[in-house]
Image (tube, rainbow, N blue to C red; front, top):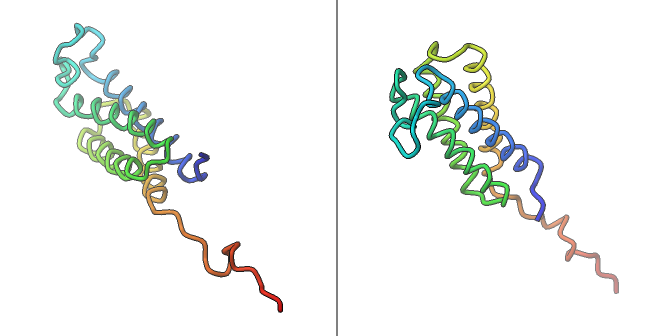
Length: 140
């Protein structure tokens, strides 16, 4: 099954936006690199805010959702649009907590992902009566 170009674009942009949001949260203030495995560091970064953990989780879920959207499941595009909007909101609330370049890249990727996922979530149009191949002229 091949994806329509807008669905492929939405899937790729969501994967990039989710991965980048996860990276921004991970490398932000109070990095999680010192966390022991299976601890609560991923939701409560030492020295960071609770929203940094939320950004990490939302980005990770968006990246996983984008992998599902490569299968063409329409609901995954709707969820991707919602999660990308959540990333935008978190970045707006925490503006200045992360590097400006990282923040701008996260906002740009998320904006593009919201638009692409929204357009990709629309149902595919059915063939019109005129272009239906079963509508052949009948002679006789």
